[in-house]
Length: 184
Length: 209
Ligand SMILES: [Zn+2]
Image (cartoon, rainbow over all chains, first blue to last red; front, side):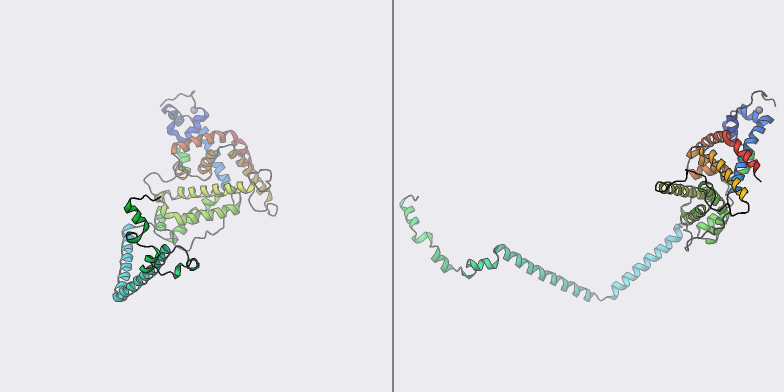
């Protein structure tokens, strides 16, 4: 096979030959495979790089530290079928415990307890509603009612008749209106 | 890529299980001893990787411990077992980034010592019998540091992972979550800069005992 002996690749192409020879055109790759001078050039760069790596390794100290790991095991891979069975078993066991507890308690106790609680709540509700009604009817506190004498008034029908006479029977205004007298 | 480099920095090809894959599978299934074997297999690589980036033995050891602890806890999240190595490196990269961020933040409140990025290891040079060797090593680190400092953040990361940590392009791509093509471009740029500055390093290396 013949190649162009004069047309040597430049240094950049030699570097590309180290990084990724496939990136170079076919003609250069062919040249590199046959030219002793270029092959030596590449070898020199590679040697420098190898030297650098070796030197760095020589210069680095050795480590004697023992790596300590957590007490627990490394986190496992999640295995669906295996874990599914475990999860199902756990759920079934939990459900069984809940049902056992539920059926072991006499239902009458629960019902009685429920009624007593309800009754207590409704009792408290009644008290509360009475308080509200009282407040709505008598906005003023009892002490004010005592001062104005309201609490001593017995507003029976007799008292009201006396205080406010019946308009339909004997009132002056009624009689005047019947006569056509206009009252101012 | 040339066969020689490929041979030196090889990694499992597509479809072929990595040699550590059975161990990873066992560790994922809950085997503590399998995980311990993985630690044995990768502790040195991770420690060195962290050391190259922190330059202090104690910090490198602490971070390595954290890396394995995190890997132990998050192993179930690893989908492809043959990617364990690059996954481990990605954890280490993140831990180092956190460490450097914290260090930069702390340095805002502390007087800096002339902004020297590359520092000797924690060992006391003068107390050691091979003090000269140690000094030369430090000089070499300084030189490596000077070359690496000329690279951008991404170029530096790709370059270190490839030639110091010896990861394959595919492993780097997986660890940095970037396409292989992007990794190659960064690597190419890094190598161009490295070529310009590597002569000093070579002469220093030749002086090494
Ligand atoms: Zn040539």
